[in-house]
Image 1: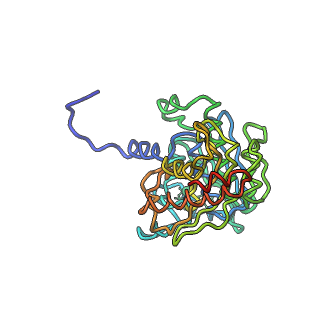
Image 2 (image 1 turned 180 degrees about the vertical axis):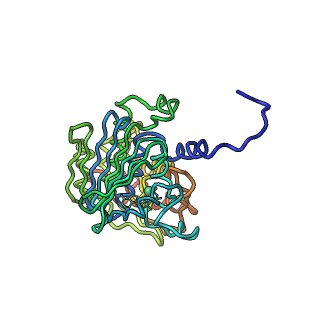
Image 3 (image 1 turned 90 degrees about the horizontal axis):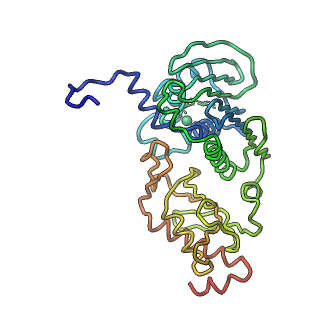
Amino acid sequence: MNRGQRIIKLPDEVVSKIAAGEVVVNPASVVKELVENSIDADANSIEVQIKDGGKSYIKVSDNGFGMSKEDLLLAVQRYTTSKIASIEDIYNITSYGFRGEALASIGEVSRLVITTSNGNESNKLEMVGGKVIKVSEIYRERGTTVEVFDLFFNIPARRKFLSSEKIERRMVTEVIERFLLTKPKIKFLFKIDEEVVYNAPSSNLSERFKLVFPEVKSFEEIDSCTDEIIKISGIISSPQFFRKNRSGQLFFVNGRFVLDNLLHLALERGYGEALTEGTHPYAVIFIEVPPREVDVNIHPQKLQVKFSEPRMIYDAIARCVRDTLRKFEGFQMFVEKI
Ligand code: ADP
Ligand code: MG
């Protein structure tokens, strides 16, 4: 530690590694960013593979609209995006991406290979530790494949902080499960090493719920539950099916997975006395609000959100859950009491 030294301006290569660490924290965050890009590219079929918990290899392949060579070269630079053009746009955002940081950040801390075709031209780009080392013409079908080798190979301290293969694998699987639930129309193939974990054809929410939570034998869909400006939909389990923690409860705001303790509490308030203490039902809840009611820009990984009227959202969730609970036989009496 050199306390008392003169202030210096950090070299660009240090700045870019620090910035990369905001977006890329582990294999799961890489998979999240890459799958979001595939969805933003209108893909209807996405394949993900990881090896060694994603630490040595991650592949995300899609049949989306791909990129031209010119765009491919821009895509791996920092703050380059095709998704917004001005600051106002982020309050009307319909894509997952907008920061233009993911590919650059991933490229900064790994060996990255991208192949892409927009139907007219097909190219391959290779990058090592933030530097493009080769661009070549190839042949492939329309779409994009991103391969990430040896995450954090150039930041050993960071690599050491990755969790065990088992934990990294689990976190990547959870990311995939969120996409399975929120994008049921998109076909997903997910492999860990050579083993197929999910091979999910295009389907609907209820089928995807069964795939992700096969242990839940009784659940109901929330029927069109709308407030003036909020729309709540999704699936909740019968109170008889629960976990001892809240890991079976997922919330999405305008299609984005979010973490917010109050949402869990609102959900369970909706169940009221139907829940025994220490039991937590399963739920997949989609909250649709006008983009101006929610700020998705407060966290680099975009997991936290800020509602302009939180109270209104929580009340709507509790009410919609309570109404849906009536559909389960034997639980009407609990509902009447609330
Ligand atoms: P962002 O998603 O915030 O725009 P990224 O760094 O993730 O930033 O991607 C940069 C750009 O690269 C995107 O705006 C998009 O134009 C292009 N891109 C990235 N991934 C894909 C993909 N799978 N298919 C087509 N274009 C892509
Ligand atoms: Mg992106």
